[in-house]
Image 1 (cartoon, rainbow, N blue to C red):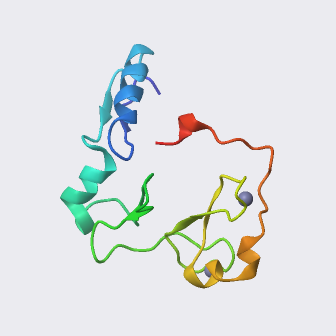
Image 2 (cartoon, rainbow, N blue to C red):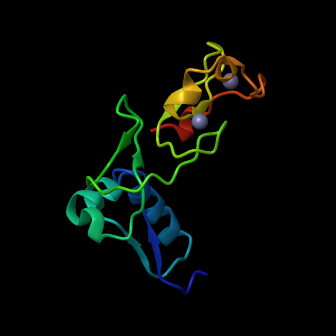
Length: 127
Ligand SMILES: [Zn+2]
Ligand SMILES: [Zn+2]
């Protein structure tokens, strides 16, 4: 693997910048990254690029579409219908996000938390 070219990417290009340095230090010969991350890639190529679907964001927008033709590739966790919107689990002490369509979000069933309460949020994995 260390002899093969590797392309790293992340949302805004910051995390893969760090990862690329770590990989080079650990002996990877050819490490590339998408300059500006998927956000810039999507802005530059829109529907002509290789990216499919909306981009999950870590802010209140929750998802970005790069064109008006963006395909919805996410599936609602209840009905498996198309959805791209993650919503906070309604149990306040739970920090899980769930992918729900608008109709299922309105169902009382969507209020039941089925997540492991011992699972703590890893702040390193956010942002
Ligand atoms: Zn649904
Ligand atoms: Zn939950």
